[in-house]
Image (cartoon, rainbow, N blue to C red):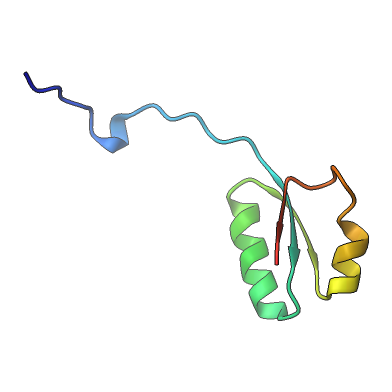
Length: 68
């Protein structure tokens, strides 16, 4: 017996909850592209352009993910 599944476009999906993401990247263009992509996906994003600033921002519990 085969089971048919609705096409992907007809499946009901629940959006993922927004994450708080910190980007630590010294290449400004890379950080900007990643920032724009993640923000467009609905996440709260903050960026630091050097490790020292990133370390200062990365307080425990403040972010769900850190991208290096």
